[in-house]
Amino acid sequence: MYPLISVIVNCHNGAKYLKTCIKSILNQKYKNFEIIFFDNCSTDNSKELINQFKDSRIKYHFSKKKLPLYKARNRAIKKSSGPLIAFLDVDDWWDPKYLSSKKNFFIDKSHDYFYTNISIYHEKKNNFIKYNKFDLPSGIIFDNLAKNYFIIISGLIIKKKILEKEKFFNEKYNIIGDYDLLMRISKYANAKSFNETLIFYRVHNNNFSKLNNKMYYYEYKDWYNRQKKINDDNFKKNKGSFLLQLNKLEIIYYLYQARTFKLLIKIIKVPNFTSKLKYLFAFMLPIKIVNYFRK
Image (tube, rainbow, N blue to C red; front, side, top):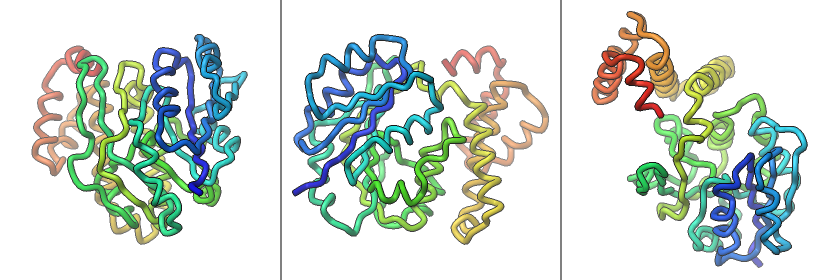
């Protein structure tokens, strides 16, 4: 018997994309799942739309108060019944084979979490781009993620006991909670990767992380400083990669704010030549033009 998979769908005013998301779950060839639909105080017609699906596997939960993202994720997880937790954001969707392609690995006790390559759908351009163009690693992948973070939460399935061990997502974060969790578990948990692009991640103007360069930078800076205090062997080994990422986020943030000599020096010190040219070009453009391309 294949295990019950609890699919966590967090929603706040996601009516525009809700039907595509839910249909993609209900159309899965793997049938042993439940949907924990956590409506985070939506004011649109999300509730009416979800009630149109007459399927007992859908468990609807409504929060009367809008919660921070990772608090909402944790609430939803705690309402789940399955030993495996999958995530699908309401603006993304799955291929019908997404769950069934992994079913034999679900009963293999040697793996703690599973992740899959994704196809990025640019809503404005109406095109698809494969996210990772390299073979995804399996096993203990902390070093890989430190150098190049490549997991999207809508392509993640994880054993609930691992989430419980880690006390779920860190609720102090609003953007990097996924990253923080994966960096914690990837130090010891055994990953199984799948290179097929069976998930579709939608990029649109209302993507929360896209609109918050400042928050992204300051949260990552907080995370980096916390790791410095812990200073375990994993962090020491990859400190250069983490610092490089912090510097890049700082440059991106300040490019949209103000041009200073200090920022120019940081750009010059970026080791990747292509990135350096891109930042230098943006640095020389007027802020109004840079902000235009940000939209």
